[in-house]
Image 1: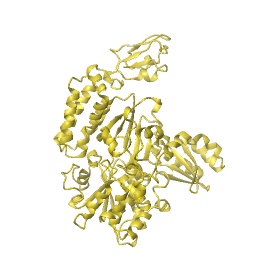
Image 2 (image 1 turned 45 degrees about the vertical axis):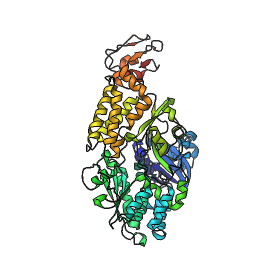
Image 3 (image 1 turned 30 degrees about the horizontal axis):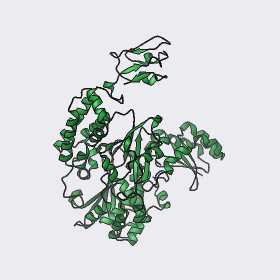
Image 4 (image 1 turned 180 degrees about the vertical axis):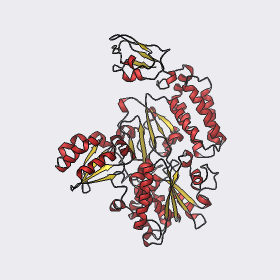
Amino acid sequence: MRVVIGEGSCGIAAGAAKVHSKLHELLEGTDISVGIAGCIGMCFLEPIIDIYDEKTLLKRLVKVKEADAETIADALNKNDFEALKKYEISEDDSVFLSKQTRIALRRCGLIDPESIDAYTDDGGYSALKQVLTSMTPEEVIEEIKASGLAGRGGAGFPTWFKWNAARKSEGTEKYLICNADEGDPGAFMDRAVIESDPHTLIEGMLIGAYAIGASHAFVYVRAEYPLAIVRLQKAINEAMEKGYLGENILGTGFSCFLKIKAGAGAFVCGEETALIESLEGKRGMPRLKPPFPAEKGYENKPSNINNVETFANVAWIIENGGEAFSALGTENSKGTKVFALTGKIKRGGLVEIPMGLTLKEVIYDIGGGIRDNREFKAVQLGGPSGGCIPKELLDTVIDYKALSATGAIMGSGGMVVMDEGTCMVNMARFFLDFTTKESCGKCVHCRIGTKRMFEILTRITEGNGKEGDVELLEELCDGIRSGALCGLGQTAPNPVLTTIKYFRNEYEAHINEKRCPAGECATLRTYSIDAEKCKGCTLCSKKCPVNAISGVLKEAHAIDTEKCIKCGQCKEVCKFDAVEVK
């Protein structure tokens, strides 16, 4: 019997390492082994323990605490699975995985990410062997072309086209680069893949390197992903030792060396030319294009850049054929897409679905709907470069073309769900705050324009908006979109434009009525107590830090709006839902 604890960053943060340590201590000397896996994607249920008999999953235990380890160990020693029922995953929560189609995430949470043997035992590196022993680089590119695989970093550019361009570029020294600089708020797809299945990335990159004729490759990964870096480096070392990486791979004459570059966390380095500048030791700022990286990239040599998820699909495509991948998805968008489902959602985590499902299916069927059964309001796709899609467009199909038609973009895969308590003006302000701070400063339109937009949005959320502000925002958006040099600057206005398009009434309420319809903007909130609901328990008055609430025991209380600092503590402690926010 094997006990496997999910130890991605989410699991460790929830206490999985402590559970592991305790179980290892309690089961040491028995015939029950204790090991680790990465993140299976059900972040809302961490820590997770899977119990196997050989390769058969017997039980999945969720939300396990260190204090539960003794009960679990005792039950396993006695083979008493009945005692584990209270920890078992529910049928409702099991739907989260059963409704997915996993390719990029096919091994995440199922194998030990720190063991190359676990990877090869599951068929790992067989695609690389196939490519190096029986396929030409041109045949590899044709297979990727047949699959319809598009770049999963956000742009959706055909992968085969980029590979082919680099392949045909003149020069014998070429480079392959993986963009793992995942900077979108709420996105953690790339981190999870590297932490949970690093060899899938390495194998995909080696196949790509062979296809374009590169002997050197880099993974540019955020320094804020320490666990991912540690596990990737271990995987690189193991692959070198086993002959899957380095000189004369598998005796085929093909050589490729792989290095990790830890980025300093600049969001703009997610743009491929800014990434190259950083990789060369310069300040991360976009280059003018053309020339494109396929012609002049790293050190002015032909280079190809794809993101983690793109490479994670490559080995599967080689093993199963391009047509198998293209059979999934829609006419415009082939295969599957990974999303980080976060926000006001019941079941948050990593989701991989075939292109063509609707937003509603992902949010309600897989994600379980809105937390606390509140009303769905909008979903933000594409991070700071994306847009907000409202309730009336929940049936929108998930593919590049359909999402672009709404004003949002697919992006790298962040999907942030918002409920009725979210102020859309404040949401736009949040993303503009991020974009303003992360602008590299090279373009005046982006450097100054985003700052001016942020100032206007701040003014509106503080109750100081004025007539003409919405029109001024739209004008600034047009200027930035047309004047910014790189894709990050050009898409920065998207959160503002989509919130104006679908939630203009909220902007008008803030400006004309000095009111936040969602009650989220603190400056515009008004707190009051419903006399009919109030039971006079005095909890609110005791909690108020400025003594703005008056009243006697068992009689309705009242809030002095002049004294009230709008901290919200009265609403938090009220057991009778008597505190109202307008």
